[in-house]
Image 1 (cartoon, one colour):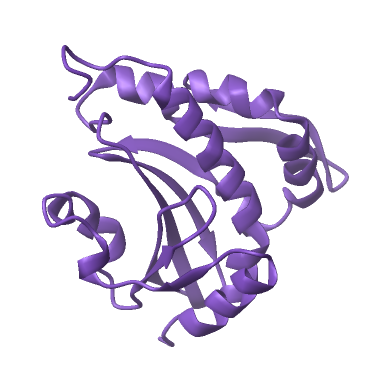
Image 2 (image 1 turned 60 degrees about the vertical axis):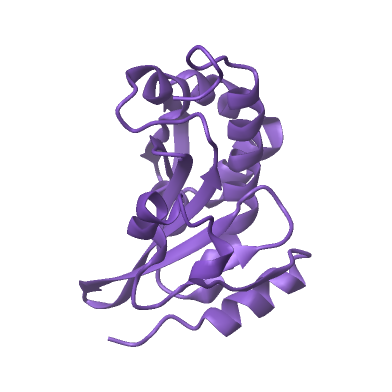
Length: 190
């Protein structure tokens, strides 16, 4: 199985105007590493973002008919917990659609409160409608996890990941704004 070309991804993201570099364990707060390693500590490494709304991009190889990779866009947040049903009701979201003659029909978002925000973003909806046939776009999912929100998808190569990054970053922006508006627990922490 080939290793994901992180350097190519970093170059493609730079062409899109995003600053990033190869990530390393020191980029993650030591007390958060046990929670984030599931998405970041894979064979192919991870990317640390210096711009945009995504904090890290984790990449994990999957055995299929050729090189396929699960991608995890990690958005850190001290308030989210995987065991908190309210966190899931807030951010868990995924696209839904029907295809009619290769064109999306009834395209929208289902899930938590975030799905309403994503559905109201005209730019995000237009980009999703234009690209929903592509694996990278139709596999997008958002989940609340411990100390983060994870936007997941699957890609075949760095170009595919770069093509979906703008949408994932916009989703991350909405998730960050939404979570800031909500009070979790007595002191704001889970």
